[in-house]
Image 1 (cartoon, each protein chain N blue to C red):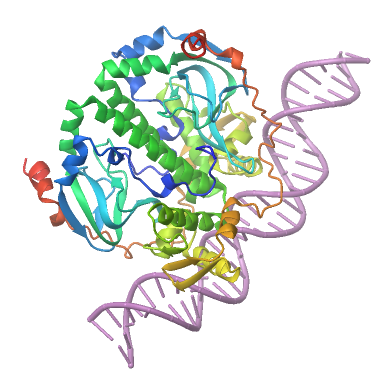
Image 2 (cartoon, protein in one colour; image 1 turned 60 degrees about the vertical axis):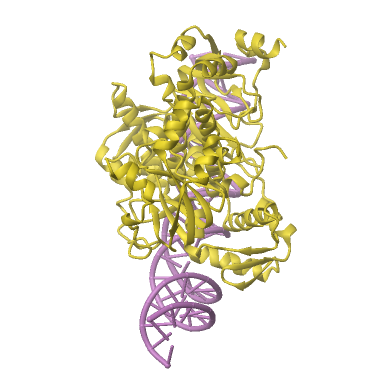
Length: 267
Length: 267
DNA sequence: CGACGCTTTGAGCCTGGTCAATACGTGTGG
DNA sequence: CCACACGTATTGACCAGGCTCAAAGCGTCG
């Protein structure tokens, strides 16, 4: 399991948990603890594309969908944020995305000015922010790979798997998934229509891979099958694009720069 | 033209030019000037997924494709780097992507250790790296929007437009595009097959929007038409996903945190 | 109970992928 | 100099997955 070989949704894909929040010792965490608490209702927008960035937020309870809207009205959900995740880490003046609660949500608000002040005092914070962003970049790339080339079955299976693993990680039942978001949100996240999402759920149900006690509750019956579906092993056809011998990795390790040799291989 | 409303390929999408390189005054630039020069041949890999990160590179001439390979053998090209662009800015231990020359390429190599040393001395560098990464994140998100929901025509038109604008920006003829990469590279970048890319080129040719003197040279005849095609205005059908009144932006500006008001609106 | 929103299911179509054959361009060898 | 081979690009025929349009369940809230 190397870091980069997952072809289902990585944890990172769904979670925007930042490296910053993983450092309890920082003054950043202290600031968060005393930050003001805010509650927003279902479907309420926390901020919109183009809004001035005023705060960094951490989810306490609930769930937030981060999305952008295209000219034709389509939405692309870039990710969901769950309790513990942070949003609004962008460096720009304005938000690049919309943030909308998919259910009633409580969050802590931290003014960006305070973050900047801390950054000015503590050089390490910039570094940590950089790390956090690097993670988000990786997550976005993963999502892109997913929405780019995978079938509806693979996408939905991977989506469910990510939830199962999230539950497992949080000590909850990995086979009982509560979907906080609507089919529309899921579809816009996976790059599918609500009909296709719904049909795929039904297909999984017919295959006895899952059960759907309610439309927003999924019971995973056959986890292994779900993983197989997500991996796309069902497709026995060899893929053509770049068959492998074409464009063979012919990198020459001896071609490294002189500086490289002394700095990294000389040890 | 706000920063975020472009729905063709933004400059950022194709360019990985970093904020760092835009700062000529920094010691970083000095380091680059004295960095070793390296030449790699067409199709040669500069580095591969999983390789230890040893250097940061800046393209002098040529072009590099950055891509990842999925389990089934498909490639997803995450971007192309052209002269002036920097690659290898990731924070991780290992490279997340493969970097392959699409034509003979010269580049400057800078050991990461040197970057880290500079970062330790200069707190601003971390901040700049953060900015550079934020740009790349934005570019990746743009690309995701493109590959997610747009038709082949829109993708290819947007792709050509990006080249046209790049030329314009560099003082070259915006209507004469030289494509350094193969159809395979383009297809893997846009999430299309080579056949579809080729067919779309032919379609544009038949529409008298472009000419194809050679397979790797595009003459833009009707720039306006190309922009229209890229924008997807050709589709008169109203889109359904999230029709607009559904999920209306009902953000309440009065709900901002107490701290927000004092920090940002009190001025 | 009715209205509304969300989900599910069905039927048909269309875009783009697959398979396959042909054309083009370049480099190599006779 | 031409013949041939190889890699890339183009074009065609066909197929299928997912989108569109449409209608019917289902839950919830007034």
